[in-house]
Length: 138
Image 1 (spheres, one colour):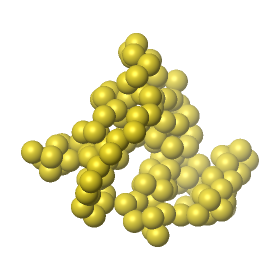
Image 2 (cartoon, helix red, strand yellow; image 1 turned 90 degrees about the horizontal axis):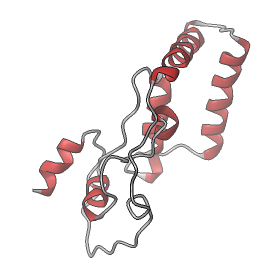
Image 3 (tube, one colour; image 1 turned 45 degrees about the horizontal axis):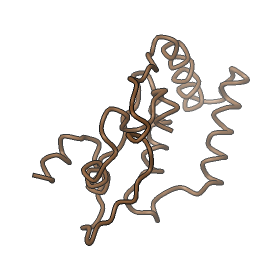
């Protein structure tokens, strides 16, 4: 969902290595582009919750996206909440063409999956800042 928002793979700016894996385990989550609708960010954050039991089901996600699509596709809202959703996605549609999706030339190994072996991890946590996770690794 963050790649749909930014046009770039999550964490594209850093090496995909053990450090990134630790940061993700300590709560690092990808960023969203400016103008991404708040309802979309909230759903994505639910999907990335550190506790799998708190994550929405595929059916829930499908129904939520379908509802948003109907609101935007019909350009019609039945209440304040739907009107806010419609305006948020219309605003995002205006911003999207202004965002850069260019990526630097990376070696193929940078974004390639690797087997990382870790002996122990603490309980996962949610965090939205790479700076918070950097402090935990020091």
